Image 1 (cartoon, rainbow over the protein chains, first blue to last red):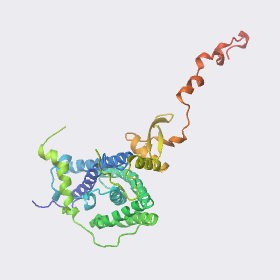
Image 2 (image 1 turned 90 degrees about the vertical axis):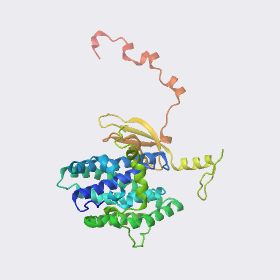
Image 3 (image 1 turned 135 degrees about the vertical axis):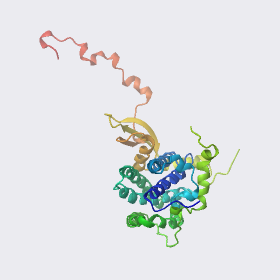
Image 4 (image 1 turned 180 degrees about the vertical axis):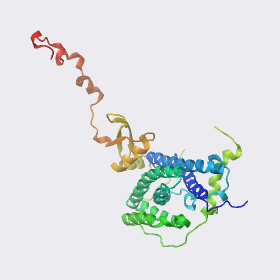
Length: 238
Length: 114
């Protein structure tokens, strides 16, 4: 099948919704498995925050495209998803999850204020609310970067490893129109690096493709889990 | 039945020892919350956290999931001092101390209502 258009405002919004839906699914995988009970609840809350943003965006785009939010989430294949490769990466250990979250939060702190100025009132409203949540998330993820870097030798090693591993997925964030967010994001990352003493990875290799439907193998497994019930029992409702 | 617990270098495999070490690092805090329309803080539960800042953050995540506009206090549990339940019998026995209430005394009519 042909790839849907990628340069329309609707496509961009679907990409943002996909970012949040996939990340919500990943964070939800921590439920009952987090290192502490309070972290279990925190990560679950963040998952719900991201899911709320995704749903609001799907509903809004859905009215223009004649689709339900369920169709976006449950009926598309990986080739139709427009999320960043970063959010589909496996949770890994707690450090990887925190670094991934920190990268996303730093990005969303640039994205949502920008969209809050949109001519589309619905999008502006969604973005304004999401911005408050992103501030809260960033406080959490930034705080944990400090704690991991300043904790034990092991936590510091894991934090640095996570940085090194996920760095290759950060370039994609700023492709196309999103290039305007680069400076703000770099600023937040540099502040964190300065406070923690962690080193910025030097490898310039960057992966790309998520925004046009070319994903890492991880998205396939994620969607299989997420969509299984709807695909096995089409039209199933609670 | 035994199974291998994954152990980091320097850690003990004994469950009791590991648990104690982690609990020392994350002491318990009591959480008090005042709802937006409330007039006083109410004890709502407890949680574990390493310091005051994370205790506040955890309290917000754990205990204020469904309401914003609240005031949250966190206090290390060991800082809460209280009477033991058995002490309460001597401490509060107001019903038998009528002489602590003004109604136990006759007032001359000339004084009027006090």
